[in-house]
Amino acid sequence: MDIIWYIFDMIGTIAFAVSGALVGVARKMDIFGMTVLALATAIGGGIVRDVLLGYFPPNSLRNVVYVTVVLVVTVIVFLIYNSRYRKHAMGPRSRASYLLADALGLASFTVTGASAGFKLYPELPIFIVLLGTITAVGGGIIRDMLAQRIPSVLKEDVYALPSIIGGIVYYLMVTSSWDSMAVYGAFTVVLVIRLLAIKYNWSLPKVGKSKPVAK
Image (cartoon, rainbow, N blue to C red):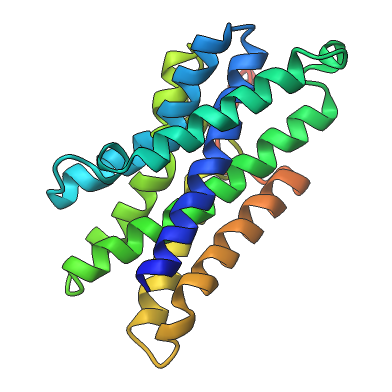
Protein backbone atom coordinates (compact mmCIF):
# COMPACT_ATOMS: atom_id res chain seq x y z
CA MET A 1 0.00 0.00 0.00
CA ASP A 2 2.90 2.38 0.70
CA ILE A 3 4.16 1.91 -2.87
CA ILE A 4 0.69 2.49 -4.31
CA TRP A 5 0.26 5.58 -2.11
CA TYR A 6 3.60 6.95 -3.29
CA ILE A 7 2.70 6.37 -6.94
CA PHE A 8 -0.58 8.27 -6.63
CA ASP A 9 1.11 11.02 -4.63
CA MET A 10 3.69 11.43 -7.38
CA ILE A 11 1.00 11.42 -10.09
CA GLY A 12 -0.80 14.20 -8.22
CA THR A 13 2.43 16.14 -7.74
CA ILE A 14 3.31 16.02 -11.44
CA ALA A 15 -0.24 16.81 -12.56
CA PHE A 16 -0.63 19.77 -10.22
CA ALA A 17 2.86 21.04 -11.10
CA VAL A 18 1.74 21.16 -14.73
CA SER A 19 -1.49 22.98 -13.87
CA GLY A 20 0.33 25.48 -11.66
CA ALA A 21 2.97 26.19 -14.30
CA LEU A 22 0.26 26.66 -16.95
CA VAL A 23 -1.50 29.21 -14.77
CA GLY A 24 1.83 31.03 -14.62
CA VAL A 25 1.98 30.97 -18.42
CA ALA A 26 -1.55 32.33 -18.66
CA ARG A 27 -0.66 35.11 -16.20
CA LYS A 28 2.46 35.94 -18.27
CA MET A 29 4.80 35.24 -15.35
CA ASP A 30 8.51 34.60 -15.67
CA ILE A 31 10.02 31.22 -14.85
CA PHE A 32 10.33 32.10 -11.17
CA GLY A 33 6.64 32.96 -10.94
CA MET A 34 5.75 29.76 -12.76
CA THR A 35 7.88 27.79 -10.31
CA VAL A 36 6.21 29.39 -7.30
CA LEU A 37 2.75 28.55 -8.63
CA ALA A 38 3.81 25.02 -9.56
CA LEU A 39 5.26 24.39 -6.09
CA ALA A 40 2.24 25.89 -4.35
CA THR A 41 -0.16 23.74 -6.37
CA ALA A 42 1.84 20.52 -6.25
CA ILE A 43 2.89 20.42 -2.59
CA GLY A 44 0.57 22.93 -0.91
CA GLY A 45 -2.28 20.49 -0.31
CA GLY A 46 0.10 17.78 0.85
CA ILE A 47 1.71 20.15 3.36
CA VAL A 48 -1.70 21.02 4.82
CA ARG A 49 -2.52 17.29 5.01
CA ASP A 50 0.70 16.44 6.81
CA VAL A 51 0.32 19.33 9.26
CA LEU A 52 -3.19 18.15 10.15
CA LEU A 53 -1.81 14.65 10.68
CA GLY A 54 1.07 15.94 12.81
CA TYR A 55 3.90 15.14 10.35
CA PHE A 56 6.79 17.59 10.82
CA PRO A 57 8.44 18.45 8.55
CA PRO A 58 5.87 17.61 5.85
CA ASN A 59 6.67 14.71 3.53
CA SER A 60 7.19 16.91 0.47
CA LEU A 61 9.83 18.95 2.32
CA ARG A 62 11.44 15.91 3.89
CA ASN A 63 11.95 14.16 0.54
CA VAL A 64 13.89 16.14 -2.08
CA VAL A 65 12.24 14.16 -4.88
CA TYR A 66 9.01 16.19 -4.73
CA VAL A 67 10.60 19.62 -5.14
CA THR A 68 12.96 18.25 -7.80
CA VAL A 69 10.08 16.82 -9.82
CA VAL A 70 8.18 20.11 -9.64
CA LEU A 71 11.24 22.06 -10.79
CA VAL A 72 11.81 19.70 -13.73
CA VAL A 73 8.15 19.89 -14.77
CA THR A 74 8.20 23.69 -14.58
CA VAL A 75 11.32 23.91 -16.75
CA ILE A 76 9.74 21.59 -19.34
CA VAL A 77 6.55 23.66 -19.46
CA PHE A 78 8.62 26.86 -19.70
CA LEU A 79 10.68 25.50 -22.60
CA ILE A 80 7.58 24.34 -24.45
CA TYR A 81 5.85 27.70 -24.16
CA ASN A 82 9.02 29.68 -24.80
CA SER A 83 9.57 27.89 -28.07
CA ARG A 84 8.38 28.84 -31.54
CA TYR A 85 4.94 27.57 -30.53
CA ARG A 86 4.54 30.26 -27.86
CA LYS A 87 2.01 32.16 -29.98
CA HIS A 88 -0.43 29.35 -29.20
CA ALA A 89 0.05 29.76 -25.43
CA MET A 90 -3.11 29.00 -23.49
CA GLY A 91 -5.13 28.24 -26.58
CA PRO A 92 -7.78 25.48 -26.65
CA ARG A 93 -5.17 22.70 -26.42
CA SER A 94 -3.41 24.36 -23.50
CA ARG A 95 -6.72 24.89 -21.74
CA ALA A 96 -7.55 21.20 -22.23
CA SER A 97 -4.11 20.21 -20.91
CA TYR A 98 -4.62 22.39 -17.84
CA LEU A 99 -8.05 20.92 -17.09
CA LEU A 100 -6.87 17.33 -17.57
CA ALA A 101 -3.81 17.86 -15.35
CA ASP A 102 -5.95 19.54 -12.70
CA ALA A 103 -8.46 16.66 -12.78
CA LEU A 104 -5.69 14.07 -12.42
CA GLY A 105 -4.22 15.98 -9.50
CA LEU A 106 -7.62 16.29 -7.86
CA ALA A 107 -8.26 12.54 -8.11
CA SER A 108 -4.78 11.51 -7.02
CA PHE A 109 -4.60 13.75 -3.97
CA THR A 110 -8.11 12.80 -2.91
CA VAL A 111 -7.06 9.19 -2.48
CA THR A 112 -3.70 9.99 -0.88
CA GLY A 113 -5.33 12.31 1.63
CA ALA A 114 -8.18 9.94 2.43
CA SER A 115 -5.91 6.90 2.73
CA ALA A 116 -3.48 8.78 4.99
CA GLY A 117 -6.38 9.78 7.21
CA PHE A 118 -7.74 6.24 7.33
CA LYS A 119 -4.35 4.82 8.24
CA LEU A 120 -4.19 6.91 11.43
CA TYR A 121 -7.86 7.49 12.24
CA PRO A 122 -9.99 4.72 10.71
CA GLU A 123 -12.80 5.47 13.18
CA LEU A 124 -13.30 9.05 11.89
CA PRO A 125 -15.07 8.94 8.50
CA ILE A 126 -15.77 12.69 8.37
CA PHE A 127 -12.11 13.46 9.00
CA ILE A 128 -11.05 10.98 6.32
CA VAL A 129 -13.35 12.49 3.69
CA LEU A 130 -12.44 16.08 4.55
CA LEU A 131 -8.73 15.31 4.65
CA GLY A 132 -8.94 13.91 1.14
CA THR A 133 -10.78 17.01 -0.03
CA ILE A 134 -8.40 19.44 1.68
CA THR A 135 -5.41 17.64 0.20
CA ALA A 136 -6.97 17.78 -3.26
CA VAL A 137 -8.08 21.43 -3.32
CA GLY A 138 -5.62 23.05 -0.90
CA GLY A 139 -2.81 23.56 -3.41
CA GLY A 140 -5.18 24.95 -6.02
CA ILE A 141 -6.54 27.50 -3.56
CA ILE A 142 -3.02 28.71 -2.74
CA ARG A 143 -2.17 28.82 -6.47
CA ASP A 144 -5.21 30.88 -7.38
CA MET A 145 -4.70 33.32 -4.52
CA LEU A 146 -1.09 33.89 -5.59
CA ALA A 147 -2.27 34.37 -9.19
CA GLN A 148 -4.95 36.83 -7.98
CA ARG A 149 -7.82 34.65 -9.14
CA ILE A 150 -10.96 33.55 -7.37
CA PRO A 151 -10.08 29.99 -6.22
CA SER A 152 -11.46 27.37 -8.59
CA VAL A 153 -13.09 25.54 -5.70
CA LEU A 154 -15.35 28.57 -5.15
CA LYS A 155 -16.45 29.16 -8.71
CA GLU A 156 -15.75 26.15 -10.95
CA ASP A 157 -18.72 24.14 -12.18
CA VAL A 158 -18.18 21.01 -10.07
CA TYR A 159 -14.75 20.93 -8.43
CA ALA A 160 -14.66 20.03 -4.74
CA LEU A 161 -17.78 17.84 -4.96
CA PRO A 162 -16.06 15.02 -6.90
CA SER A 163 -13.36 14.94 -4.22
CA ILE A 164 -15.94 14.69 -1.45
CA ILE A 165 -17.74 11.90 -3.28
CA GLY A 166 -14.42 10.16 -3.91
CA GLY A 167 -13.56 10.31 -0.22
CA ILE A 168 -16.89 8.77 0.67
CA VAL A 169 -16.41 6.03 -1.92
CA TYR A 170 -12.94 5.33 -0.55
CA TYR A 171 -14.20 4.97 3.01
CA LEU A 172 -17.11 2.74 2.03
CA MET A 173 -14.87 0.48 -0.06
CA VAL A 174 -11.98 0.28 2.41
CA THR A 175 -14.35 -0.71 5.22
CA SER A 176 -15.97 -3.42 3.11
CA SER A 177 -14.83 -6.44 1.16
CA TRP A 178 -13.60 -4.10 -1.59
CA ASP A 179 -10.77 -2.66 0.50
CA SER A 180 -8.04 -3.76 -1.94
CA MET A 181 -9.69 -1.71 -4.71
CA ALA A 182 -10.58 1.34 -2.63
CA VAL A 183 -7.77 3.56 -3.92
CA TYR A 184 -8.46 2.73 -7.58
CA GLY A 185 -12.21 3.02 -7.16
CA ALA A 186 -12.07 6.42 -5.49
CA PHE A 187 -9.53 7.73 -8.01
CA THR A 188 -11.71 6.65 -10.93
CA VAL A 189 -14.86 8.15 -9.42
CA VAL A 190 -13.24 11.55 -8.84
CA LEU A 191 -11.62 11.66 -12.26
CA VAL A 192 -14.75 10.60 -14.17
CA ILE A 193 -17.07 13.01 -12.34
CA ARG A 194 -14.68 15.93 -12.80
CA LEU A 195 -14.13 15.23 -16.51
CA LEU A 196 -17.86 14.85 -17.09
CA ALA A 197 -18.46 18.12 -15.26
CA ILE A 198 -15.97 19.83 -17.57
CA LYS A 199 -17.41 18.25 -20.72
CA TYR A 200 -21.06 18.96 -19.93
CA ASN A 201 -20.58 22.18 -17.94
CA TRP A 202 -22.23 20.82 -14.82
CA SER A 203 -22.62 23.41 -12.12
CA LEU A 204 -24.02 23.72 -8.64
CA PRO A 205 -26.92 26.12 -7.97
CA LYS A 206 -25.95 29.79 -7.95
CA VAL A 207 -27.79 32.92 -6.98
CA GLY A 208 -29.13 34.35 -10.22
CA LYS A 209 -29.97 37.89 -11.14
CA SER A 210 -33.09 39.09 -9.43
CA LYS A 211 -36.07 39.59 -11.68
CA PRO A 212 -38.03 42.81 -11.56
CA VAL A 213 -41.18 42.58 -9.50
CA ALA A 214 -44.31 43.06 -11.56
CA LYS A 215 -46.45 45.99 -10.45
